[in-house]
Length: 443
Image (tube, rainbow, N blue to C red):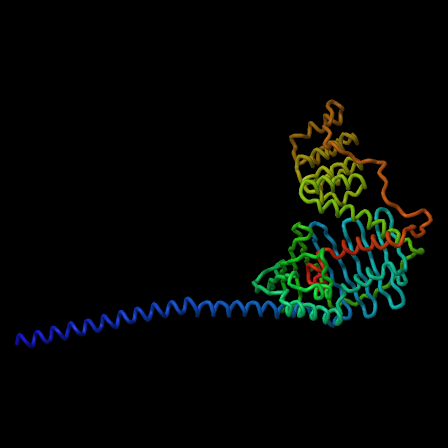
């Protein structure tokens, strides 16, 4: 009996040892399996998912290029903020006729592309002039560039070829997409990177990349495949060592717009072209101010606005914007302009000074700070003097570029003319061409 019991005990020990062995082996297999999954399977799955996201982004981006491809009549408008320089563009097309309206901080330009001629109208300073420019060789590249803003099958094919070329050369890589909303509208935010440094000089020249072009561009495009619309585009890049950006936003689109495009303006010789050159010179000075950045830009824009008497650019003066507006309000004795001042105290100071100048007690009722009403009335009564709100004032003798009295063409050398047009084109396309992968971004 004792022997049998011992045998049974040995059998139990053996079975327990066997079970322990299987448990250990199972744990080893589990650990090894987990390591394999962690080391190989999960990265492979993650890589697969990442590739799927990149492919989805690529597919959506190519779809976004086809917006307006077959449209024959439409209205399309958008706004671009190019590192602080804001331009609004309206594109109108009706069959064979085109009209582009471009509004920048200092000027407004309208270009009419008709069947038999092209006309340009320029509004700058106190002038507005229109001229035929279909045979103007100096403006040929500029007019062609503006017309490329419009949608066409040729543009669609060119954009597709450029994007495919960049992908093939390894210069364009898509990072993926994420769901986003723009003004309550859902869209897929497509992210990508363009690295022009990988291109050879020959390849770069093919797509218009030069030594002054940004080397690397980070882009985002928010595209809604349901409505087939791009709502926003953002590009960030470094140019000449400075961080730059372009923010593009769709304002409106009407793909059934069919209002006839007519040119019914009076024009004389090349006066609009002369006015365009005058606008270029002044706008280039304004852009130089913006490029300074920070407080230097604020001070430069402030002086620019005061010197040229352009109140519309005060909003670009940053920390000096309120004082800039204040100067114009006091100079014109225009209390309505005081509303544009953001600082509450300066806004009331503006009203008080104008009330004192005009001896108008009713203006004291406009003060946001009612505790200063009596102070305002005392100034009107001459009991106290108003404080000077700015250490700079508008110079009434500043000369602003004007048209020649005979409206004739400004006498410039060919070199000077070409330089001006290059400046204008650089201003017009800054943040578009190179930084946005050619013409797709501009429209």
